[in-house]
Length: 630
Image (cartoon, rainbow, N blue to C red; front, side):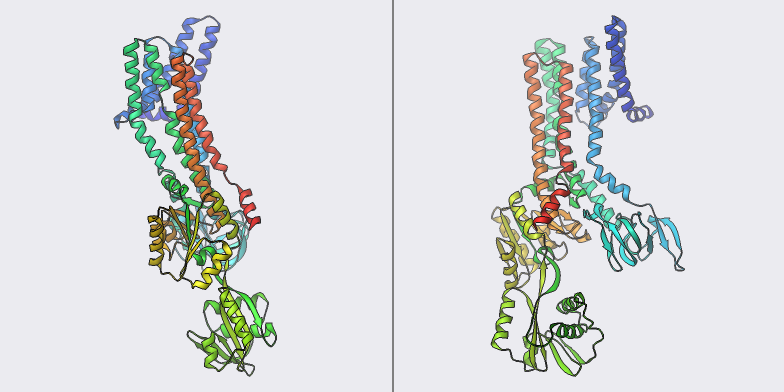
């Protein structure tokens, strides 16, 4: 057992020793020393075949007829007929091919290694007296406050308790530019503080952090086989034994041991076996680098077949934050009235009121100091109060009717126009007369229009919106974005029913939601895509998680899925074409054992290098183009 482990650990040095022995052998032949030539090549063959035979034996113990077994038998046969040069070259090429294969495969996992290396092992915890202590990250608990200095990685998920700085979140969200973080902002473990300083109060530690879940998820995904890989595995179970049988029959019929051994060598399905997994690993690694978590090769296959994208509206197509989009003032100073309304709305936590307060703050209005008296929040209607001796009402039409405020024809027309645009309205009356009309709507994500166009160019046939919002607002948003089909005023169960209806019609459906209230639809669709900051529900329910919640990542994920599946098919075609070429060459007489093994190992490298193109697929330049078009 110790010898076996030693050989496995030193396979690379053994490969280079074999190369030196082969070179020495051919030098001896040139110097006309045939015995030294044969001895060096025989020694090279023995050294090289040992690790190969060990792998063959381990596979046989679990009842698997492996490629290594074919090579081992071929080497034994070459020894029998005294062709030490053939056996030495074949085994060296096999070991050298495996060496290059491992190095190139390791490169496809570079994004995961870079993630893992970014995880800090220690943290500076803040004591009650203001001093810090350096502890192991595993000893941190929720609620601890850690100090993060420039150039350091954040050890926890949490919120900024103190400080100000720019954080590089590329490893977690795929965002290429540092993000400005101030008190109250959320931060993630594994992100790097570019400058400034932060005190972060931990909300998640250890394996519960978003960073840890991302690494775990991508590592699991790279080990999950695609449909193509599963087919190839089943194919190899029968193909490899079949090659042994064919070689045996060739030897018995032709009485040509060399030909039988050559059949064994040329029949190795190396490129076929490695082609699909390496494409899968490279594609998933590319996604991780761009903040896209794809849960395995099977998901990648299914994603590539999607022809219908179904979107939730709030928080997906829109930013999920209401904002003032229209402001019509009928009398008085616009800013003065808005400041008074903001003072009233400071009594309420209603989303529309918060949007008005935000608009006032953006204009720099000093509303907090206004004297407010006799204030009242009327549920379902709005707020009232007295400011500087004037009675102010801010709310819906029902509130104004309660206070006897009538709208003129022009005011009613303005209100109707605003509602037709899908905006919510807040009517403001002072001393019994309407003075201002405020329109509030959820803002569309700025990148959505260009991204939807890109999705259609990539192969999407149907774009559908399912929302619980009112029909007027939903229709307005759909028309602005060019959505093909819209259904509004739906409960979660209604959304699931529509997804099932589309599936029954033969569509391949991807549901795109926020991963929280749309969990049933995410689970029902052929592909569930969660747009959010890696929430637990999103990671558990969906098939694809877009950690950075934007449509650029969605477009990249869709294009990547199609590219990965196409790359896998290219590798399968290359592998089959090489086998056919070798068989034709064997029959025609221009392919021999050593040359066949060379072509075989070269084909493995070709499919690996072809798959490695996926690693750099869709760089930042593509995202920048999408930004510009949006």
